[in-house]
Image 1 (cartoon, rainbow over the protein chains, first blue to last red):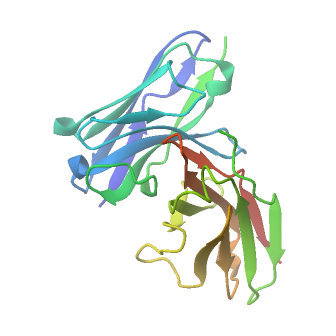
Image 2 (cartoon, rainbow over the protein chains, first blue to last red):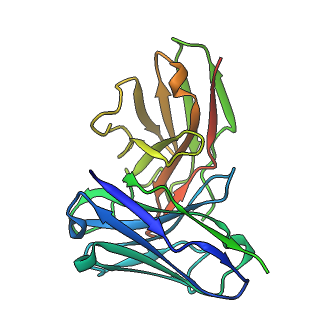
Length: 123
Length: 110
């Protein structure tokens, strides 16, 4: 079964750091770009970051650029999001998503999603 | 990058057709063929319904179709069914090599 499972969310104080992880299974992980998308409960979707299959190219949304770092470990079929200098506005459900395009680039169409991990930023 | 503009809500009766619009600029929708649409039911993860403006992933009903005219993309659902009631989001690749989503549209099946 094709599956993405996120973990690592939780309660964190403003200004602190948190690292999210996403475990992939059921497909050849290193054939696809991967992304993080977040959603404030009851609100819309926001693309956070993406990374190509070999980590050769990464991209970030303006609201997280310079604070968040995306990475992957193909040997472990895992995607990560290091979040530093967290703010109240970063509080959201964070989804891991698989790019549907096979190959070298980021196609920005997401055919597999995890169930998300909640990040709460509060003192 | 500003969010794409979608109507907050649309509604229709079973069997009818509805269209959801998604308006951007020449730096996103109008400039690239990478427009996607997602369906999200309450408490669930989004599901890809349309990609590359008008292509349907395997398993998605042919009642769902996508199109684009200028800087506006559209999702049309024909033969509306109760299970189509959900939130719908458009997205587009941008000139900054990033992705932008629309604000979302709540579809109500009357």
